[in-house]
Image (cartoon, rainbow, N blue to C red):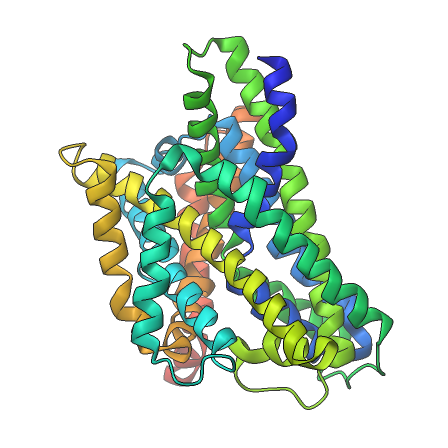
Length: 394
């Protein structure tokens, strides 16, 4: 088993990278680069902390819980844990993340498909997602062996050529400290911490299924170690891509603002020309598709096991998730991004962060308090989010 697992580390790491590299991973780094200008290092630093280091910490937390996100969320109590888990599933599923992937993909490809309405693209995109998620056990192989290598090669091409043809940096829009803080918060919008938590569970589940034998305690430790090494590989690749994307925004983002969904396409046109941009766009479309596949699998498994208590199978659950993702996807990227910028990020994300740290401290140091820290941070986050209204009232 040891040899088998070693041979799969790279494939799993690439699959994790492909799962996490979705809609927000294109929009936010380029936007950070455009906003930061000559202070790009400060913008990148803030983004890497919230969109790379925090997901890695979340991955560690889930590994310590053997990939069982139900136990992970359940430490705050049965009902609060269920509600927070349910809300998180909605966010990474049909309530935000999947529609955001669909709408970003549409915005990115719209220069090449000017006559295609968004509803046709939505049905096409989600239909492919359904077909590729159909065989849950093959997800890692498809993502790690096929989609990720194509995506990485494409991104390396555009980043290297973009840096080779670098122009002067765009003007900075704020002070270094303000850019660091703003980019740190922008990283929340990638939702990569939630992605790492849920993707870790499906990676470990598929690894156990692929063993084809009863998993012993020694095997469990080995699986955790393999999952950690693969996670470090995948998330490190994600960090390098973030740096490259931010630098592209810094050196090729002159005059670009407005629609976040089209930033990558516009930068690609400037660096590679129309044909090159089309090729890169197709590769990144595959990346968005891979994240949609992974998220659909996670949410469908939750629907099957937690909502319907295994009274229906995985495929009918997947049908439900796919259909629920349609309405919000058709509304367009602007409507979806308004959800990202609201209480989901400002209130929900700090709660998940504190829960993650408390759970890691519990496993490593037997630190038992969790309800009070989570409740306190949740209260502070609510006050912060509504501070303008509160200060006006008083």
